[in-house]
Length: 499
Image (tube, rainbow, N blue to C red; front, side, top):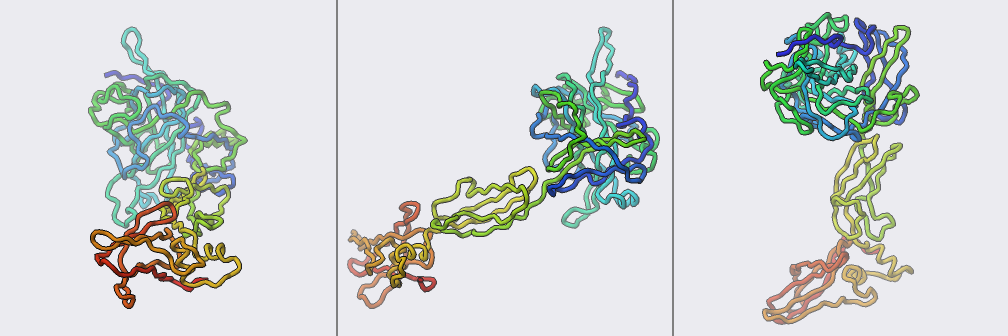
């Protein structure tokens, strides 16, 4: 095993003079409201004015060049490595990167916290959602000289104040939380201008109460913060040796740490881009407004403190309100009406999975979803597009208001001539009796058509029919009778008095 000292890498804060200072951010996770947003910074419990600069981190436009399985939704917990219990201040792994992008932009890592708010009442009173602690990501190149001696070259290192949630007491259903630890993701922005080699060491470091002095100069839950481990094979890139890791333990860096066994490597993801971030990487004239993830740097004078954090503006939730879930093809707006009017809200409506507005009378499952960057939410339901209503048909046929009755509704329903009583039926003899066919409007309103049979023109009984779709607007209905003679008629069974 190789043991080497590495100067200055035991623990690095964003500014050297911040050691011993209790530095915290608040308001780091606001919700989009259309106005500029920014975090607040506190030093030793006192709110301070600071000059902020930002850059947006767009992980969707960047390329993942290494990942050992960070799911979108984490399980409640992972097997994890306790820095405090193992006198460790950094843990990482030598990895082979995938893809071709090599300008490292940020590291996403899965951590596990055991700290409960009930045990840290002062911190919990200040922030019921959690606490902040500096976490660093480092990228090293591993070098071997002609004599076989191993050395490290530090390529990039960045420290971010990470928002660490409290371990829950209960699950959403009210039952007790079943694990000692709670998993969460942390995003650590890098310099965004350093090109890294195909093979590099990615390491995560943070201080605890049991490594060095009390890390922030005040007691806290830092020794209950662990790094999640995974035994799964990487989904992007490669792990050349799954039985070893990189570690800084008792102030000494070790690679390869062959006493590790197949415990697993830190669960992390490295994002990279093809070209360096435009200079300056952080813009002091930019104020975040839109939902997204931002690297925020606070510079405080006269102490000359410079501290970074990840600032997230969440999408505003949308509770969709609609009108017109039943429309006719003859309406001027034969589609769903969305009533929400949030500034900048952009929606997409799909009918049975298609963005095309239906033109065929039918019932369509629909989804309304927010598609802009600042809103989230969706609504599902059923949209009913009917054929031309009786009132619409009547207004077209009788614009002067001619008398109407059942015969006109029957004409509407069957496509017959509205000014002639009695609608024709197609009747023919069959080997076993008689069959009858008639046309009926699809998705009509106001009632239904009943087919009736009589052998003596005195007693009429409704008979069942079968429908065969003829086109988008009409069905052909048919029925058979074993009788060799008799009479059929169509009867309008209206739901209300026609206009």
